[in-house]
Length: 181
Image (cartoon, rainbow, N blue to C red; front, side, top):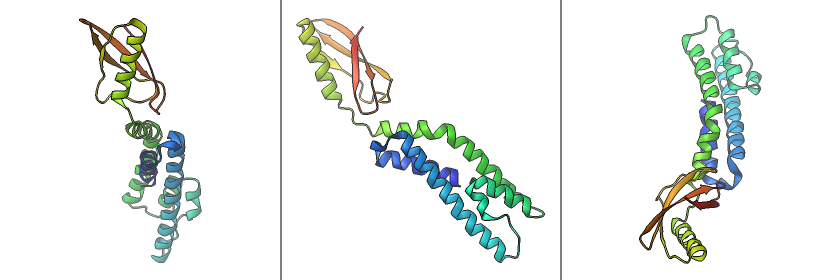
């Protein structure tokens, strides 16, 4: 549960405060997931003690939530299958959250980026007119990829000619460069 909570917090922070950036959102998510796991370990430890068991100490959760769950499974004799399942699920979710955290948070951040399509089309058309003396109409896709390094094509039409313009996103803030093909 803690890895999912951490991943969710990273996504929410990325959506609410894009100025923090991907790394800060991911690290905040890791911290919240770890703190949530620590809290749940303390509650679980107290409940098991109240039920008369001698569980693994909650301090193991300082290492990670799955370290506590492993200690919990090893101390309970015999450990119910649900205890081992919780440990396995936590390990799997932790391992999955590492490769997913950065791209998911990044996609949330870029989804919130403001892309002023009309301004980009106008700027490109104006620069083509300035360089060539030909007035063109530029048409770009409505929902282009906005992550840093992504590219998309626009079409510039004027005086019976059609040329393609490749736009490259420089960063996640909406800065771009372009060139004609």
